[in-house]
Length: 330
Image (tube, rainbow, N blue to C red; front, side, top):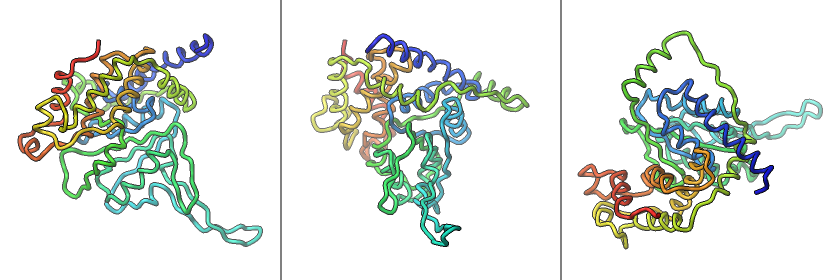
């Protein structure tokens, strides 16, 4: 990397802490979740955000979009939502000069830099599947024509973990398309007190635009250039393979899991570890990056068996055991 290019990248990376400060003007706490959403953005993936109502999931995503100077659309997923409501549809128009009629594609809310798919498990599989091509190919096809989506492109889907009546759980194949599965927890006592004081008055903070969509694309390119040692890649490979009951060195996995993560999980862990390094203004991956991100990357890619579910053994417990069993690379 040339000196001038390195200086430019360092200037962009130095804006990431400022970006987090802007988001913190509105969102109190939830720093881990904010970091993971930004990691997903830098790695060029999508994330599933789970939390009970009232934890500012929508506000968090909207605030981030404002600070990034990127287009933002929110889609409320409901049982009667159709694929065309997301992708768009053709409408019949008339040329006022010639009188000829023609069909014109009217773009749906998917055509934005950041798309919030709110309560994605409230809509049937047919509509959920409308997101698949967009997530993987960064484009949509309608009427035989391919339409490119904006770059960068990030889908953040949310779901409520406590009420499952009338919901359509995401199939494993679609869950695997999400780079990270992020869980939001309740704020601590001081954070909740700050929320009560800061959101019930007349003051409304101004969000400054820190990075543009062009800057994010450049940071995504930089993320792939971050150094990761062969030893750490080998450790990641061992972690992924150890999640699979057949051949796993962990008795815990063999006892509680039906199946484990596929190769996409390893790719995700490498990319996200690089993104976390960039977010922390480093140009090399360290073991802590892998250890921290193993949870949001593996938790939706490991299937627990019936016995584990009956005894409330979670995927996070399995991941914790794996990290203890397979000692990190030095």
